[in-house]
Image 1 (cartoon, rainbow, N blue to C red):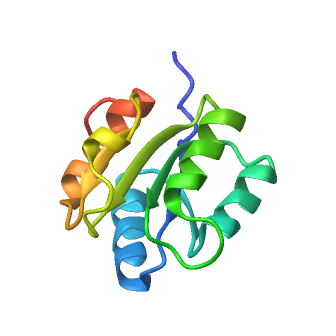
Image 2: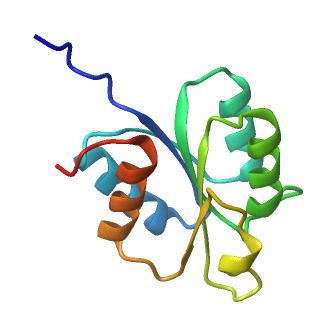
Length: 127
């Protein structure tokens, strides 16, 4: 008999409260533990706390001194095991600006596509 797997943790980094809430709700509904941060600085603090994050889902355009692109770069350097999904609706960043294995989703994105990408990244079977 196999042990049940511990749910993977996803960190949602989004400054728009409604978009963040919808993403968090859908990820929790799909069985993930979800942490959230309204800024890249707060996301960095969560990562530095030692939380076992499997995927960071981050917007690019964020308030403060650190944006989603800079956060992504820090995640790749400091936590290479963490998978990245980057999203933007501003047009300044596109798929060519995100290094694989990270993924890029243009806004508006479909929540079911986000869930499918997270599942694929962490090796979870389709529920």
